Length: 321
Image 1 (cartoon, rainbow, N blue to C red):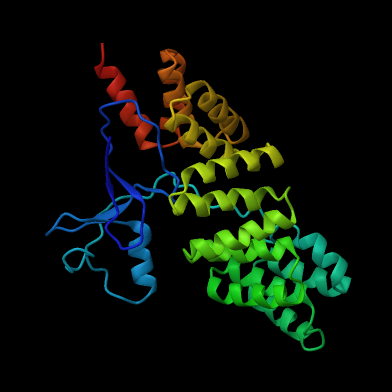
Image 2 (cartoon, rainbow, N blue to C red):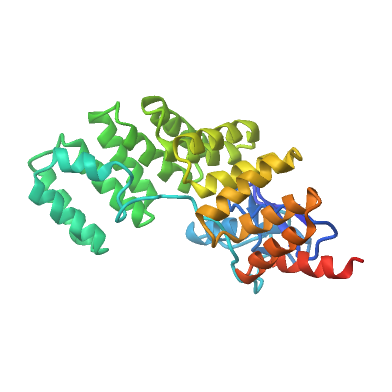
């Protein structure tokens, strides 16, 4: 398996540049630490992950090689099986917002905003929030709702400003700290996000998504052991979080604790049978434990879901005696 680091300044991702493994290897397709899709400079052979390319385009600057300055051309690689950060929200509300809003706002106002969000009518929902804020400027929940809508629209800079308004009114609210931290993660402001998410879990030690996203922030900051502690905390508070079980398994596999890793990956696929990466990694764990036929069955599941590493691994196994 061949990996190279992303050449963009500040990016810590590894890029898979060869889908033809020489060994049976754990997949690391978590997009916060690993990339499959990339652009390669034809002059100096530097590699830039697709996330950094998108960031350059979003910033309105030329997509240039960080090493030699030549303009980069996109390669024809289809996105595959990347894992998104969880929102785990109900009808696009952050966890806890529904209960919080229902107790603080007039029920008719809340139901109208909630219905509009559920119907993806975000402009109208924002108008309702602004109308209510004319008479309730100190209503933290309205500011939080406004931030939530902006976050859903991927306008995270604006979202952070609205969560700040909410926190200036209700500074001990774990939901607002989580929401702000989530948006900061989307902006790749990882240290700030870590601080916010840490506040959320200190205020509510059972906030599973707070622990999960702390793990993401720590992983991006290359603080892997601390991230692993957060995956443990996540599954302690929410045993049904399949992504956390998968990430926990990857950490166990890194330390060659194959039986522990197998248990984690098994839980991940039981919770989400469409998690191709977890199927692949379960197969690797089984293979390392000498259960080769069971491993092949898992690689076949990953291949059915379109996971390239599983396909390549099956080809490798066919070549072996």
